[in-house]
Length: 435
Image 1 (cartoon, rainbow, N blue to C red):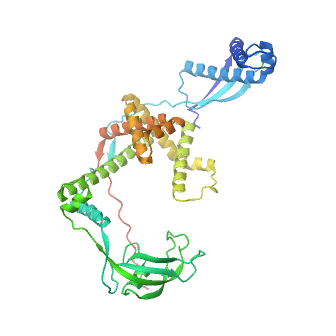
Image 2 (image 1 turned 60 degrees about the vertical axis):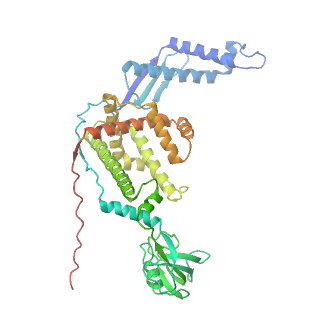
Image 3 (image 1 turned 45 degrees about the vertical axis):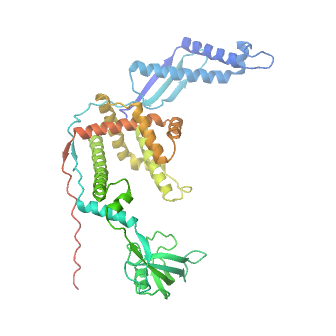
């Protein structure tokens, strides 16, 4: 925790203020208390004070701590960002309340010039060849597999095969499939399948070994050598639709092929512009985080680390990782993530100050539109998203995120775009020495 963000106040509450609060608290208990032998709200105050002594004392203390701390920080004009930690508490009958409050405040700093930041950015382009490749991919997705007359299997064919594993595959049951399409020579077809099925005739059966790589996605097959019995049952070829105006009309509300090409070009350009802009905005955040050196509150750093770890754990869970036995050394994680988290927090504080300086605010319409987008992503209703955000206090965070994005957009528009550095040269392979 930075000492520059940490504050300590010694606070004293006079006896007369304590008694005033105590009187209101006792009256409140008396109005609500129901005690045997007394009508509701009619029990004597002496009985109330005796019966609820501990509860009254705690309520009085809570109210005094909250009000006295708030009044003091307001008096000193402190921007408090953490709940106070109370120590050296002295709260005894007939004596003033005294305590020490430790807390953190938002750091003060002078804004540097933020317009005209140099940001690597190249305006994206889309070539005719790239448009053709995207449309070809669309054709491939519309392709149909048609049967061909019996002949030897060739590269590019889809062999209709049945297969059965003949060796141990780490499961109780062998691998067995009555019919599957095997793309011979395909990018995702293991070489042993291509080499052995190539040249087979429909009705022919072969046995051969398949060596699965160590990083194979099938958990039981990775690193194994498995012997298969494979029978070719038929041959199919991929039949592509003809690339013409009719194809374009089948793909959507397009007048013809030229209209489809322009739509594809526009879509690809928009994708690349969005990505390039996001990269530039990320670089702006990095520049801001490294251009200042003021201390940041520890509470913000911890929140940022928690957020980063939570996102990482969510990704692991979505990938099927077993989260039940996961044990985190939180303090170790905090130290590992402290430096990058501190830069992110620092950049966020700078962006907040810039937003204030430029009167960048968030409208209710912008919040509503983001809620609608989130509802579409989650395949639910805007009302359900809003209810969830209201429950976990997420509406304020959402508005803050929108404000940050608007500020980054402002800085991007005001930045000086420079050519991105060229990519590093590919490492050259060292020729093996002759022996």
